Length: 508
Image (cartoon, rainbow, N blue to C red; front, side, top):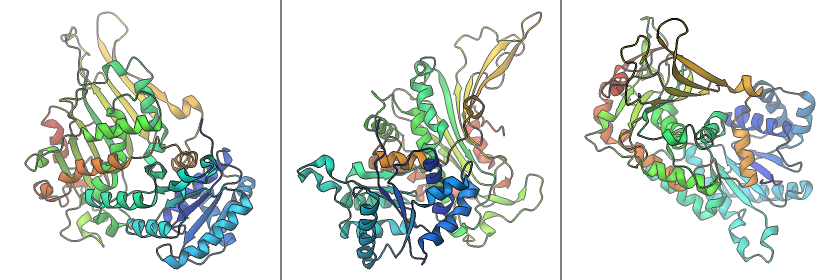
């Protein structure tokens, strides 16, 4: 098992929302669970002038609110790990005093020169900061092969937060920039969905159980649905969201990670190299639709001002402040994906995500085909809606539901669908931790299993570009206010499945 090395976690963007809401509460939870090396410290870097104690005081309120089971005594111990540095990370003059501070901390805490950078900043700042890190000579990892004692050399790694580019060209550019400063083995492209317990459990469900793996293919599975539905609006981020949309924000990143775990081939061994290689292969196998096929492979929408009951809400998306009046940015997207490989030939995967929908849920639905011979076709109760399906609920609940058919007790023969359920919280009596925590600890250990490879990222962008560029023009026609708040999305989303004789699982 990999050990957690001592290091300095350098968070660029320390004054930002992600740091206060997610990263520091996650690190507090890891501290409480004993997952951080005793010498590990956290240095926040941002332009705002603050003292170490001032930053600690700000963060305490966030940790009390966000972290599980806050303990004032444990906070005092954790706060000793927190330090702050005021500087503009885009400018070269920031780095000489930053290097001095890092060297001082390394000597005082015994972190052996190990540095883990986390880019919690706007996407436009990624490349300038990476270039400044390289110019300052903070990365020596790639030069360790010339060392007399390579094992004693320090490491420098970087975690890059999403969005990893906004299209295929920008993703490739960012990868080249990272490659000029860091070895690929030191680059950690994070997606916090892979820190969720149920997402990781999908691999165990598939590959550790012989009742599933032999039937996990086109011969027995009719189709797969992957849903990430939200009841909230875009909030105060309208200008940002109008440049992003549901495909960039959710499908290309989070939901493609789930897609890869559901559809990938079994790795020969559970190692970072093998798992990542299979994810690369399955993303590469996605069949990219032609321009003429795009409209038939997707449904796009924007929420209206009205709810299902006809009552006015906050306003239609295209009417919100910060949104271009003629915007065709999707607040809802559903796409149909096919794979060009032996396992999934002819089996569609339907992926959807949207704002202001009927319920908040993230789940995977694996719908199995009916038996080849329908012995009970004339018997009441058999062959009802989705008689054989597996539902993997990722959020807000963490559950597995397996549905199958049984005989109803009593005289005569009558069938019924029943669900066999595993509730993670109830079974294991464990509260889920913030997903960022285990992933950051993995980076400290040098474990890239749950991080994306360069090729996988670029492949995912290539797969969604037909739904984003000029090829999607027909699909975006009439997008304004085409679904009611509190509904399950536009009518075209239902039609996307209905054309194939299927329907969404719209249960809350």
